[in-house]
Structure formats: C-alpha cells, structure tokens
Amino acid sequence: MRIIYPGTFDPITNGHLDLVERSARIFEEVIIAVAKNPKKRTLFDCEERKFLVLKSTSHIANVSIEIFDELLIDYAKRKGINQILRGLRAISDFEYEFQMALMNRANAPEIEFFYMMPSQTYTFLSSTLVKELAFYKGNIDAFVTNEVKMALTRKMNKLSGNEVIT
Ligand code: ADP
Image (tube, rainbow, N blue to C red; front, side, top):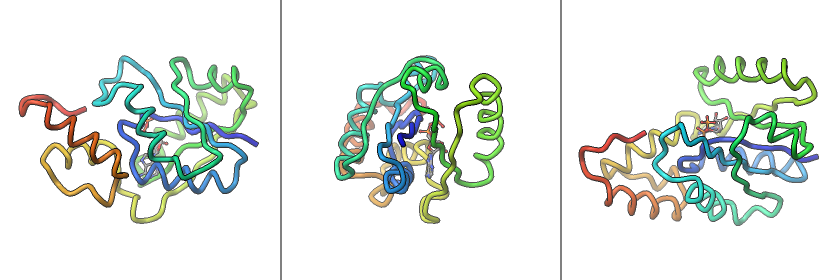
C-alpha cells in the first residue's frame, strides 16, 4: 500500500523525517508531496524544497518526491492513492487536522487520513522555528540535515536584516 505525505516542507526538518522513516517501515511506498502553493510565502521555492527533501531522504529506499499544485484530494485521486499521512505534534495541530480531514472526507470518502506522532524530541519542532533560529544564527544541528543547514545558511546570508521570515 502507498501513502502520500503532503506538506510545505519549507524546509524539511528532522521532525518530518521522523515521520517519513516511521511510515516507510509500514507502507510500501511513501510519496512526499511538496505543495507548490504560490499563495503561501515560502523561504525556499518548491524546486529547492523538493531538492532538500530528496537529499535528506536519500537513505530511505521506498520514498519518492513530487511537487503538487492542486487540491490535495484531487492529487490523491489522480494518483489513485487513498492514504494520506499527516503529523501530530502538540495539541495545536489537532484542531486544524481534524477540520481538514473531515472536510476532505465530505468530498472524498474513499480517502483515509493517517496520523503519526514524532519522537518526543521533535514534538516542538517546526520549519518556522528552524528558520527563525537560522536567521539569528542559532544552532540548528539537532533539527535538520546537513544539506538543509547549508541551504539555510546560504539563504539567510542573502537576506537583509529587514526581511520578514515566513
Ligand atoms: P503544512 O503547511 O501542510 O502544514 P508542513 O511542512 O508544516 O506543511 O507540515 C507537513 C506535515 O508534517 C504536517 O502534517 C505537520 O503536522 C507535520 N510536521 C511538521 N513538523 C513536524 C514535526 N516536528 N513532527 C511531526 N510532524 C511534523
């Protein structure tokens, strides 16, 4: 059975990776679907985000990476995959995920959402936090792969001090 793991991945963190590793032990293939979503302001464009996911997951055999630019359920239907994975960190994720799952279920009852919790170490980890830390030159070694760390450093060096991090 295959499962889609959708997200913004701006950038991929060790929390995301924790979920990819867990799900890859259960499902035959995990398709990481990077949302293009041009309305959402991201630090990395979708090709950069895809590249960093690719580099960070190269040690896992049954993972593939795609960019999608449509409604998640339309994408899943088009691929003929009825399983979608999302992560639950603190309780704060719950309400949004609950709403999204039920709304999607109304439109695509054949699709099931699966939720996994990361290791406790990553419960409070988010891409936003990592970007903030990187911006202020904090230590992000424990939170991202080396590839992501280098990409963040390069990106942050380009940013002027006045720019807002999204
Ligand atoms: P989105 O904009 O779709 O929420 P994200 O890249 O922020 O995209 O997150 C994608 C998925 O990964 C979400 O289900 C989110 O809850 C989950 N996720 C993000 N960070 C972590 C983490 N540290 N541990 C577990 N799951 C996480």
